[in-house]
Length: 400
Image (cartoon, rainbow, N blue to C red):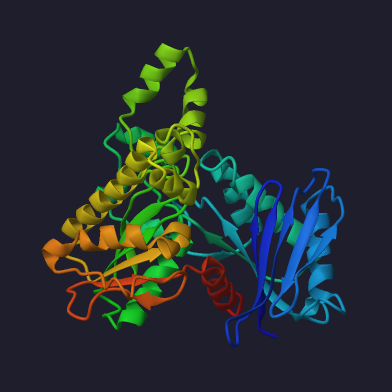
């Protein structure tokens, strides 16, 4: 029995995968939508078979988990005989504060801390905790492990994670750069070292996690030394709806000019900015922005140019910070599917001998080396697999 159930719980949704850790193959995956909202629906997809849907209103995450277990053990659509074949459950938790530099087995103390750090992730941690408690009720006695999205960034040195604000704000409230998409950055950076045959202790790797949410990390030997996202996922790159880096005084300026509250302006920066805002409202989907650019929309063109330019700036900064780079990786929705962005960013490192192979780069969603044989930097497309990363940690910790 080496099956690990990985759960990513939102306030009204629940994504899951059941993975056989003997061969790291996905047995089934699914999504429960509209939990505690009329029109609840579970879409369950057994590997190699047709997916099926269960439309049944549920009042809470406990009822949702019960239906997930029913789907996994269903005689026709299931992949296991009963819940006893699930060895452990891994939970994605967004914010672990400064306390958790790595995944941990969940205890009462861990749950209290997840709740405590909800101030830093008010939209995510409470939902993550609901998922944990729902599983504990449905499967008492089975080990639960929390994999924190912020753990990867805990290895950053003080010079990278501290903000230039009065130190008491760090001491009292732990205001610092945390970095997000951490599980993805950890997985991709470690897999890149193996894929490219680099030294596991000294390899300098830059990972570009590019999607509607986007971030860049720099790591040495698989340990993060810097990350573009900060206290929240708002900092860093231009994203689908998030502004990324701006002058903080812009918040005050808009508040005064538009007679808005700080919360209202932050909502704009999180949900109405990025390429959506820059394009004049065309879309937050990069495919739509590209289509608009092709149709002659100048705002869409500038939004794409700014998005790629910001990536290049961060990549260049991290090359300087590490004194060079051995591997540059592209992952997530845009990173895995947009060959133009990969080519532009990869070739921006031509000054240190990096070259993108145009033919090799003509690929989507497949682990591929896209640099030329004589490139001084290994450039690759590396699909992310956060669920597998969580499952590996869960299985390792549950065995102890």
